[in-house]
Every structure is written in C-alpha cells, then in structure tokens.
Amino acid sequence: MAGRIAHVARGVGYRVGNSFRGVRRWIRRGYRRWDNDVLITKPDPECPYTGHPEHGPDDQCFGHMVVTHWRRPLLRDMFRDPLRKLRLRTPVDRMTLDEVLRLRSPDGYRIRTPEQILRLRPVRRGRGHPVWEPKADPRFERARPWVYLAGLHEEYGVPLEVRALKHLGGRNAGVRRVEAAKRGAGRAGVKIRAWTI
Ligand SMILES: [Zn+2]
Image 1 (cartoon, helix red, strand yellow):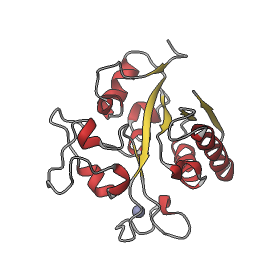
Image 2 (tube, protein in one colour):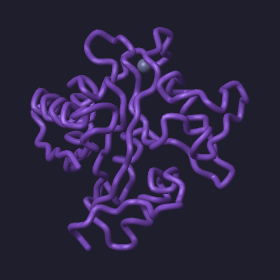
Image 3 (cartoon, helix red, strand yellow):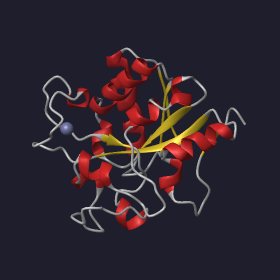
C-alpha cells in the first residue's frame, strides 16, 4: 500500500480527504501519500497579511493557496459561510483568504492552507506527506506560488510531490502547471517530483 496515493472514494465529499481528519485517517490506514487539492484565493489589494511569505518580495497579494477541490465549495462541497455574506456560487478565486478560512460544513469540516497540513504532527514526523494536485487556475502555470510552497516543504522537511490532471483547465494546462512547479522548486533550490496524470 505504501506506493499508492490515497484518494477519497467516489461519493465521499472532497472536503473529507482535504481535511485534518482525512489526513490522519490516511496515515492510520497505512498510507504514506495522499491527494490534497489546491486552489488559490483572490488577489486582494487590501490583504491584511502584510509581509506574508506567499506575497513574495514585492509584498503584493497574488492570492493564497488553499486545500480544497471545488472552485465553488459552497455549491459543491456543503461549505457554508457563518457570516452569510458569500453567495452559493462564489468561487474560491473571488474570495479572500479569511473568507475561505471561515467556511464551515455542517459535518464539521473547514478549508485549510498547505502550511496547516504540513504542520500536522504526523506529517512533520515523516509518517506521510500530501501529493499536491493543483486545480484549474492559470496562476498555477506561473512559478510564483510554487516558490512559496517549495519553501514551506523545505522549512518543514517534507518531500515535495505535485501531480496535475493533464488537460484540466485546457489542453495541456496540467503540463504547464507541472513545468511551473518544477521551475518554482528550482528557484527555491528544493527537490521536487512532479508529473501529470
Ligand atoms: Zn495576501
């Protein structure tokens, strides 16, 4: 089982596999790698996270990576906005980081950041690691988000693996995401395994 990448079964909400509980469950079941989906929030000129490493050297908000599958998590993954300000159809790329992080599902799930996943104790202890699956956002075709993610992996000492669906988001868009991930990791001086499926 060690070589296989865990993935939620059909019919199980993607929120489960992308959660703390989901990660702990994969590890308990003996998996060493599992699929975690990533999207990017809205580039927010009013972003409160001044100086966040994800902003890069120019401190401009490019958007923040979040671990979730559906572009419309309220519509597709049962997430609800406790402040009732977001619409059912609002996509992640039109939400700020704080808006995404406040979402809740009735069964108790939340959306996390990649750093929160990497900080989970069993992950830091080397019991397993996520294989990131970037979804269809053209920003993943740039090195920038990957430089940040690679830096996190270096900081937490966790192997960096990325896989992308080859034609999700356009013909060969997944190939471009993988190439960007390799460029970003190279720029950060971090080893990476990245491939399309
Ligand atoms: Zn920001």
